[in-house]
Image (cartoon, rainbow, N blue to C red; front, side, top):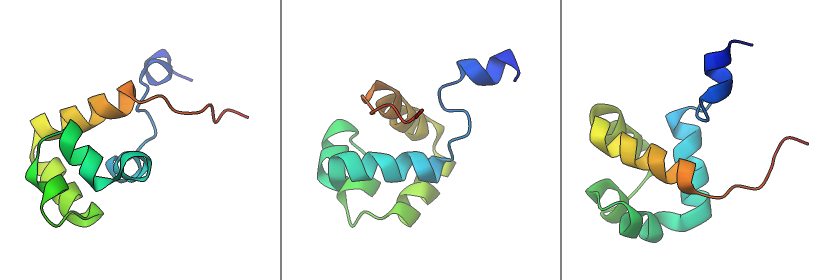
Amino acid sequence: MPKSSRQDPLHGLTLQMLLARLVERYGWEDMADKININCFSSDPSIASSLKFLRKTPWARQKVEALYLQTQWPDEDD
């Protein structure tokens, strides 16, 4: 496996997978508190959030940062 993909913690995760896991973990209301963007607070959905995040790099970076800061249980086993 190339060294770069082993070092990238988001390697293999789609934006949809990442967003779904965050929503499952926090819910839309907490997501809106953590990242102040309208798509999380005003009639939120995965589809509308994905559309916005794909067009807005700064918002996507915030979502990716939240994902990386979140403590996830080990899934290696």
